[in-house]
Structures are given as structure tokens and as C-alpha cells.
Picture 1 (cartoon, one colour):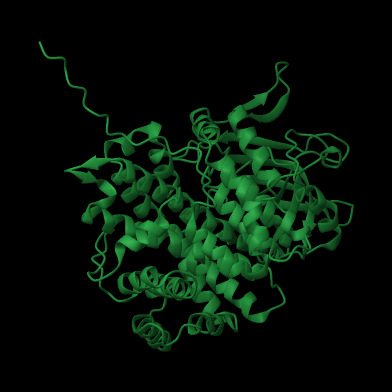
Picture 2 (picture 1 turned 45 degrees about the vertical axis):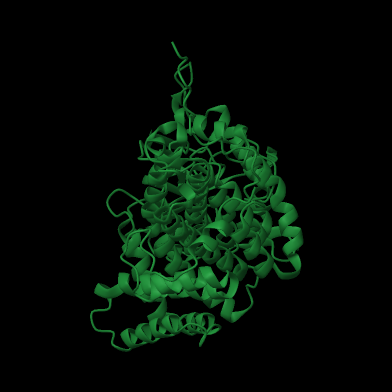
Length: 547
């Protein structure tokens, strides 16, 4: 009897031991263009991050941190209220490295040129490992510009927030080597409508000190050291600094009601908090709390863009890797014309999101430049809406490239898919951000001019982009029923901005394909339906992990 002939497994080799920073040619091109004379230093900074992020060890911690989510411990063994949260060791492994890479508040204290661009590229790279732990990292980064409303409070807290040492645990802040920050804005009755918040702040006999009573519906990372919280005074909504542990080492009265059971983001301890005579210090003027805390929201929105772009890059890289190593119908999947179209489309979406995030981060390195400041204002609202909205569709398509393997938990693609809608909800859902675009255009001088100037840098280089700009300007000239068209406007302006960035910083093939599909109307709406005549193979070859 003839021996049974063994059939090759035809499975992809593990996507491990790949430096996901240096193997990402679109990222390297963007760093070289945006970083200019700092590009070499930024690349050197990214190399160890990308090397670690591409290891089997990092992949294992990604899975473990989400397979074993945090656990709330309301009381200790003696029945005393402690409200602590226990995390899996993989969470601490991730946090220690994310903080150690300087992804928290270090750029605000650095005199290094392009510090925010450098940090954004690191955030984009390290975020491809696991997204849940990036939430406390983001909030710690974002809190500093809000704290600057009070120079004394900023001086007190910023050094610890800028530390590159991860020091977990509830202790007096002055006794810790590193601090983490959080934010408590939304309440159950209002959500994004912060005007109806009911948490009350009562002034004490000490100037600037208050006691808070109320409930916060959604506060992530409740084990962090300090929070910015909105509460009502007689003058209206006011912002407060609330430490978890007071300077004398006693715990601030704060109850964790429960941890949220979420669709994804399982590693991150999102919670409901109850304040009952909780000590706080006012930040900024009474009645101006929303304006004060929006400085923090602005920076967290940037990380929503970067985080979504990071998810998209991870999804694309996994799809490209699988199709490079998998064969069907007599050829590798990556060489099949239909698959080339899908991968090229995914690559365009990923690169455009990354460019938008890095460009807006670069604007933060020039706070005194009026154009950069106004571009950041309008660009964050636009791209927070658009990039985060595009991510779930893109990740779903990338998952499908792996077929049944992509639907299996061990591939990691379901983890990415469950994570993909979150950034569109955090820091203002789609409608909130689309309406914020209208608010910026109508109330803040210079925002429209900044957008027109930025996209105008490529005027005349692509007729489709020029026509799209003209269409937007025509629509803006007739403000009738503006709120009803807010989503159209945000989508169109965001895609045009991305198109301009692709023309400036990507390859001619990728820029042509992006403008033809996203701006030229030659696209059927699903991934893999790019118009004919484009060099799709060149797009895929450049975008896939270069190993």
C-alpha cells in the first residue's frame, strides 16, 4: 500500500520578530518628511519600540491582558472599603513599557524639537501591541495642557506625569516615582451633554478647595493618581483636580461602583465612580469648567486618531502577512488580482489615517504658530470623526482576508475588531464631532482659512481634489440646515485633508489611487473596488511589512 502523501499545511508563518516600525515604509516616509532634520533621531527612537512590539512576547501579553480583565476589589479582608483594581501581570508589562517609552506627558517638559511628533510616532507604533493600556497613557499625556490653566497646579503635578517610570499603586503622589492621570466628565443622565451634569461642588473654608458629591458614569483607569472632574458650583460647570490619595497618605473618599463590561477594550478598567464629600481643588475659573477641560479633550482626540490609525495598520499588516504566505487557486493570495485590490484599498486607508494623526501631532510642536494652532483645532475635529469612523469597516475587511483564521480568537483579529469602534465613541461620538466642526467653522476665526491653506498647498496637482474643495466651499456658502449636513461636511473635509497629505507625503501611485477613490467618485463604497488603471501592486508592495 502506497504511503499517504502529506499535503502541505499552506498556513502562514507566525508574524513575529518583525520590527513593525522600520518595516512600515509609509511610516518611515512620513517621519522623514514631517520630522525633517529630526527624522534620524525619531527613527532611532522608534527602532527599539518597533522591535519589541513585533515579538511573540508582546503578542502574548496582548492576548493575556484581555483574556484576564481587571477585577474590582471593593473591600479588604477586614471589610474595610479600599476600592482597588487588580490587573493581570501582562497589563503591568504593557504599562511599564508604554510609560518607559515616554508616551505619557514627557513631550510637554522636553526641549527636544519635534517632541510631540516623536511621541505620536511612538504611540502609533506601540499601540499596535494592545490598545486598552493606551487609554491611561493618553489621559496622562493630555492632562498637562489643561493643568496649565493654573501654573501652581501644573508645577505640582507635571513632573510626576512626565516621568518615564511606571509606579503602580495607591500612595501619596509626592512619594511616587511616576504618576498617571484620568478624567471624569460624563454622567448617566447626559452623556456628551455636559450641561446637565449634577455632581455638586461645595467650597470649603480653604480658598480653592471644594468637596464633591455625585456620580460619574464612565471613568477609565480608576487606579490612576489624579483626575480632572467636572462638577457644578453656583457659577456653573467647573473643573476640579481630584487625587485618589491625599498628600497625607489617606485615601480620598471615592467609591468604584462597578467596572464596565464592554464590547472590547477588556484590559482597561473603565468604571462608574461615586463621589461623597470627595476633596478637590478648583482648576481654572468657576463656571468655565467645560472650556478648561476641553484642553484635555483636544489632546485625547488626537490620540483617538492615532489609536485608530494604529489599529488599522495592525489589521492591514496581519492581512498582508497572511496573504503573502497563503496560496489558493494556484497562486499566492497576495498575487491574486482581486486580493491586490482589497489590500491596496486597505493600505490607502491605513496610510491616510496615519498621516493625518502625525500631521496634527506635528502642529502641536508649534503652539505659537497661528496656522498650526488653527489647523489643529479644525483638523482634530475632522479626523477624529473620519478616521475613527472608517476603522471598523477597514478592520472587518482585513479580518476577512484571513478567512476563517481571522475569525478565530487566536489570530488576534477579533480583538482588533472589537476594539475598532471605541475611538469613535470616546471623546465625543460621531455626531458630537461633526457638530464640533460646524462650531469651529462658525465661531472660531481662522479655522476655515487654516484648512484651506493646508489643502491649498497642493492646489493644481489633482483636479479631483480641487473639485472637492470647490464643492465644500459652495456648500459652506449656503448654511441652510447646516446641522443636517454636518456629517457630510466633516467627511468631505476630512477626506480632502487626507488627500492633500497623501499628495505631499506619499507616493504618486498611492496619492492617485486615494484621490480617485475617496475624492473622485470612482469608488463603489466597499474595500477592493478601486477604479481601473491604478498601480495597485506598487501600493501593496510598499505598504506591506518590509522584511
